[in-house]
Length: 275
Image (cartoon, rainbow, N blue to C red):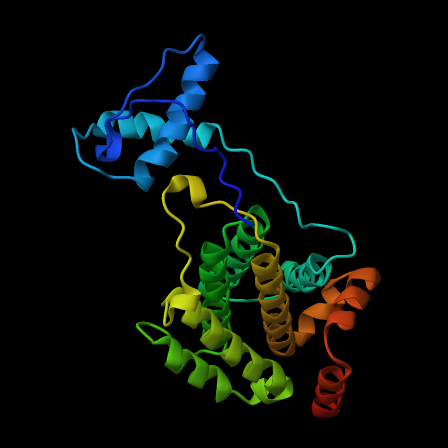
């Protein structure tokens, strides 16, 4: 179900940007004129038929269109799929907070922060209906988590490809403690690349012009949040096994929250390893 912010105006109108020339009715007040400008921006992109182009008018229309946007979140509920995704996201955020209390290189810390930034964008964009950009951001979160893990272990990552980043992290001893999560992350990354690189028409967004960029479709929202949840869990587990010493830096309730996110098998393997 696509909800473009502005419906088509059936009345005659004139709009000169994007090559469309037609008649515009007189409007009784500024609000009507502004609404008509927004509608014309959406409609111009749908039917480029020739005529005089006016870039200045288009830029004004873009500004008016953006000013008139109202973001909504129709699929959020306390018992919905977003809850599990946010729990995994919060666990990673708590680990990041605790990591500020131990010695980590400034460069490594920046990669961790960028991973969290990408994850935040992925969550926000999925909620407001920008699904493909959300997946792009989520892919960035995986890449920066790999850079963080590699760099924090002293591996040079300058000009390194993502494939070699995966190989570098896979070669580290601690990765074996979260082996299942690492394998899952690789599969998720491949899945995200499929949609980002549009390897098939089924992965196309087909959202043009501006009026259709933000839309709400429950099935796609559910898919995005499912991928987000799994990605946050995989990253959390891997970062946890590399930064296991940070857990005591959190208070008791925060430690319990993080521990509930990490599989028992991983926590047991970590205990056996340190015994």
